[in-house]
Length: 240
Image (cartoon, rainbow, N blue to C red; front, side, top):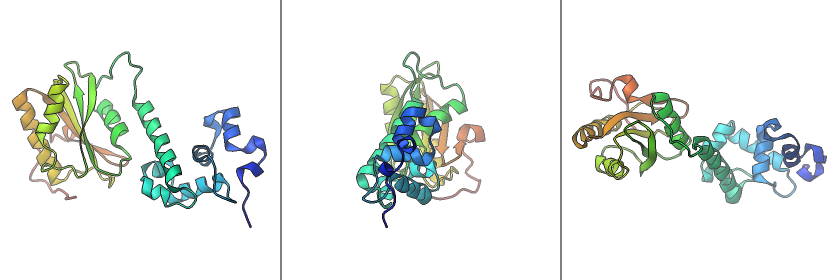
């Protein structure tokens, strides 16, 4: 027997009308997803599809991390609705990371760097390497995307990092990449890459202030661990 659709609900209980009347803060995660999805499939409410997404991926963070292919595989979603969801999450990420344009963000602490890198990298399903390029006052000039895919010393060359830094007239940078597995522990390749980038920075006169690895819910700072100048080759490390 077909389930109720949104049109079968009283107007006051429909997600879109509730958002207009009360604001998005009053809606549940299921209702917000229903607003983004727009409509369900034949004979099934979009609220059922939204609930199926939450069950499939655990919570909103799980839905955000899911790829287009994973979202599309959920019954009632498909490629078009999956694209809508990814676009909504990306808009949120960009808005959350943006400034009012009056002053570029100041990156004077590990917390500030982690916030910027986390906004850019957390939730990505592929490894991505970026560099926060900073001026002499440690204000962000821009975030340079260095590589996507497997990030290691054989595929990410310091040349690419410092080419971007020199072009931006940066005096310092913070390297960052993500581990989609969720574990931010550095691999052997991460340590080798860091050594090479720090050494190149000394040669060209651009300070490498930190290397951040962003995991699912945590991070690793080479500076905080005391590994930046000389990563500990003797300690046990994991491989990817």
